[in-house]
Amino acid sequence: RSQPLVLGIESSCDETGVGVVRGTTLLTNTVSSSMDEHVRFGGVIPEIASRAHLDAFVPTLEQALADAGVGLDEVDAIAVTSGPGLAGALMVGVCAAKALAVATGKPLYAINHLVAHVGVGLLDDRANGRKQELPENLGALLVSGGHTEILRINSIASDVELLGSTIDDAAGEAYDKVARILGLGYPGGPAIDKVARSGNPKAIRFPRGLTQPKYMGSADEPGPHRYDWSFSGLKTAVARCVEQFEARGEEIPVADIAAAFQEAVVDVISSKAVLACREHGIRDVLLGGGVAANSRLRELTGQRCASAGIRLHVPPLDLCTDNGAMVAALGAQLVMAGVEPSGIGFAPDSSMP
Ligand code: KG4
Ligand code: ZN
Image (cartoon, rainbow, N blue to C red; front, top):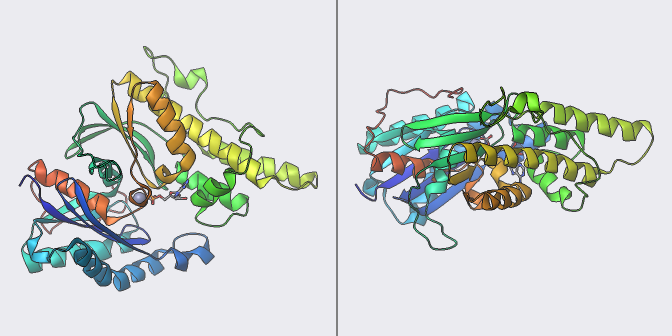
């Protein structure tokens, strides 16, 4: 089919998402989040998330179909996140998707959540009314709560190559930990993004991990971590900085620390991503993952890509955090590439690479 109608289901963490696409056109993206139930624990509680998915799935599905104006019988394929994520949470979406596939006889595709985070960038540009075409020499910068990776997309359906990644914490994890240190609550990314706007990013200079010559090497002789990141040292530096203010009995300049921390993260992510793209002939980059919602990351990466002659494709905010549309978007790419459906024999894989 040239423009397959695909239903996408996402349940890997705290969001129950159902999206519908027709080819590269988004029809609807319905999300129900259980985040409110996790906030007081300072992190997502797997058991609570799984139960919330059970409650939310059918209403979310019905809402999505109603919004898209399509019946389940019209759908060409069903796609579901099969990993990585919380095992019990994944199980709910996968079982629901299998049940729908068996009941309707529709083909079912198991989707890698991480590839979906970047594959969502292949949807048409709603804001500018532009059709998306799959560019050649395509890369992706995936920045989420569990991953920070620069990828070369040889084929979105079958061949995604890792060029560089974090060697310790993911960027989103660093945001969440630093937000906790600064008393900004959970989830930390959006909170830091907000307070950083009133801070001075130059007030403090925090370290940029793995940028020393011994790690970087040169284009001809790359060092061991030329395209890799490390954020655990940065988190420790923030903690030490806060301790020093406390020891001196001074008020902690939360906004300045947040801004300086964010500048360190965004600076090193964008500079290494652009370097990896330049040195691999990548001309188009899909930005994806929850941290892709970060205003400063979008701004600085956009500027640096533009200077390097690279096009950065930035999804709208609602498609950055977990959702079903990204699963449907990648599912449609698989259908259009002629990939065989997964059948119903697969199991969720919480640690899928
Ligand atoms: O992709 P995602 O929704 O879940 C994973 O697959 O991990 O990403 C969640 C992460 C969290 O760490 C959250 O703090 C971060 O994305 N995040 C942000 C922003 N919005 C969400 N980080 C920085 N700035 C934001 N505006
Ligand atoms: Zn995610």
